[in-house]
Image 1 (cartoon, rainbow, N blue to C red):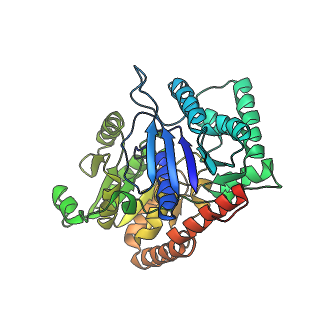
Image 2 (cartoon, rainbow, N blue to C red):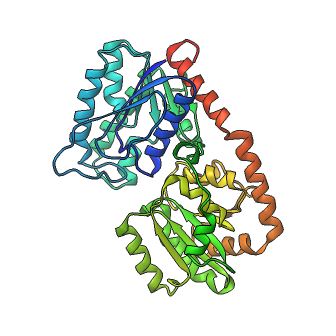
Length: 390
């Protein structure tokens, strides 16, 4: 198929939705489809067969886009909307939009009579609240009406976690959505070299066990909770070092300051952002993997790579995690520093339990979140949108 994809994101940057978009591109490429991707001017290019990236012009004064809603996205989205209109004069089999591109995508799909897939990475009205962008009830109501319009008009809606699938089911019970979890192994996209020995040498890890966090340092990720839990548990885990991978320089500096205030700076290693293909190497050094997220309902992308790793997982007992994890596949903790500390101690002290849960987690990854399943679901979405074979 000839697919026009529109992603109002910096493609590529190592964070949630851009990673998810790259996963879609990788699968569509491997399935033999041709994709023209329209996206923002910032971000690194990626090299995938039959995928061509077309960027909007740079806008003076806008160099970066933060996670979540922002006023900086308004002029970028206007440019992207015009570019979408221009490209649709060529013939495409499917228009595939992400996030707010679904708004103009729904309009243009009707005008150009092209099947429309709306890729729903989050509920945009909920984002206004979650990121504290605006408290305006009117603005939220407008976004709710727009979202309902997009969901009703789309040929197919893709959701990324059970919570979003349930949300869509309530809005359009007669249609529902195709649930495609973000279970891509991104090392296959960006390439991978085993750097675990270099990492162990660089951070002087010989004789130490490692508890690893890998992800963004946004407030909802719970890094404050994690560091306070480290302060509680460090005395009982004398041979453990905590490695935190990710974060912008300013976020890393704030985390370093908090670690110093808690007296654990000698036990914590902050790497900053690393290449996506390097994350697996860090996980090979780890004895437990951490996800202390405190808010939100979407399943973190890291959970799927954690499942595949064969390393015990420690996560908060919140819906964001329990959509995928349970007490057979992870050490779950209440979202308090005391209970998260307890769960880390259990994961690093109870070897038999840790091994069993890691084995169950890896089995779950193979049974439910394999790449073959991912491609099958994407094919189902294409069929649903077009009424033809993928």
